[in-house]
Image (cartoon, rainbow, N blue to C red; front, side):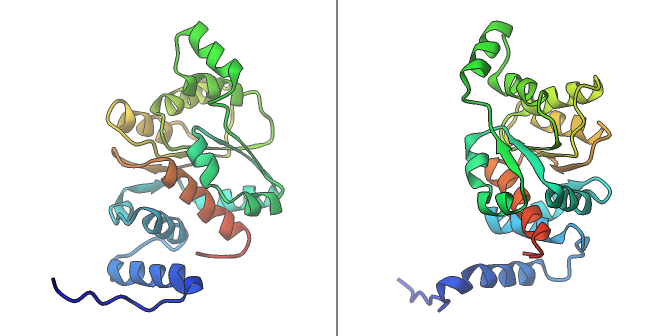
Length: 214
């Protein structure tokens, strides 16, 4: 067995060193400066450099989202995992709130009665919320499809949709629908994504809203 050499990095320096490595490995790849902190945060979370190419942003989505978070956002996630991954301390300091309705009894009942997924029922429930709505969808393409329907029907007007579900069935298509909806978006084009990616994007925006770039 060959000798393994470990880097000597203090615990509070690990994240900084990780971002240095990401920058080094990206090399001279040209990232949009506005979107760069979000892209690097997602790469940091996933160790997947494909996101440098597949993350898509509507015009000035990051700048506008940062301002919304500074005003106090109402964030809705489609999974408890994404909910858990969001930095609650940062969100609370910015007077924001976060919801995930997937496990609610009324959502489960509505899904059963209407023959839909819980993700669809949870988006219907979220459409009754007021305030600066931001959606972070990392798992359920049906949630994105329902959001698209609610948007086109004029029943909901999100300030931002983060569309990064992962999988094979209607995943690519649901993301394309959101990109055509006319609302600001951050989307991971293709099959890749996940609740961890959704939370990473939210956290990147929160940190910028608090004056921290990475």
